[in-house]
Length: 351
Image (cartoon, rainbow, N blue to C red; front, side):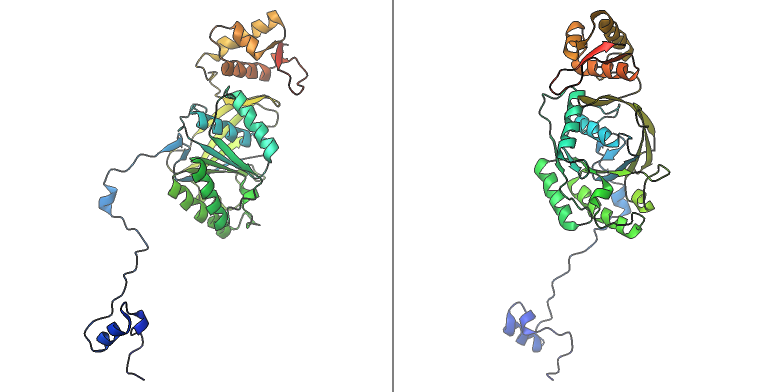
């Protein structure tokens, strides 16, 4: 034994090798260690009194920058269509059901419908808002096997978000992308998903929204850790065949829970959009006024296309006309006059 105590440095550990080690043996220097980087960034009460940045809302009162949220609903509740309608509004900067949005690029991660079906739905939403001729920052991926339980997939998602500059990311759906979770009541595994998604949302200051299904009681499905891990949980309720959609905020970390409603305006294969139940069109013109004008026009002139209806009106825009037609159709006052064949321009007639 050389008399050195356990834990003493070796020549290899010294920055200048053997010579510095010899100096240490003579007692000329002390061991030099590299300070370890602090793991935690500590704040104080004084920091809390400093001016803090305002919440940056991607969608007012619902989805903020740096958040992870969930939208859940039963099959047929139009939750996916509603989120696609939201994507178009965020991409164009238009209010969504009266809620202000931040105009920004959006990303839709589709793990359920497939490319053809989801593109058809996105095109319907664009036509519903009358922006089919406008370039929009809407991008997505279909059936790419995204696994939100895997850190490597989260890294790939980060790259995709940065590539397109997306601020709102919607994942459809929770169960289709959580490959490692066989039992949604497993709180430990559910929490592990948030340990991957939450740092991603905070780092890039984006809003991540996951679409999920309901349980038998029409509540959110699985462990309470699902609710505990999100900033906002939004429930969607709509009966099959009904145009009425009810939204209720079941949890809100930064605001008070609230409820709101929408009317689904839908023409199979042609357009889809949501409107407020207040009867106001996106053009700001009273819905009741234009409803009667369009209905009377169709009664007097027979089957007409949307463009002809707009051309015959004074001040009604195409997007507003589509909303009027949607309402009148839902109220069984008009109907589609053509057979809906591919490539045919839709025409409508009074009933």
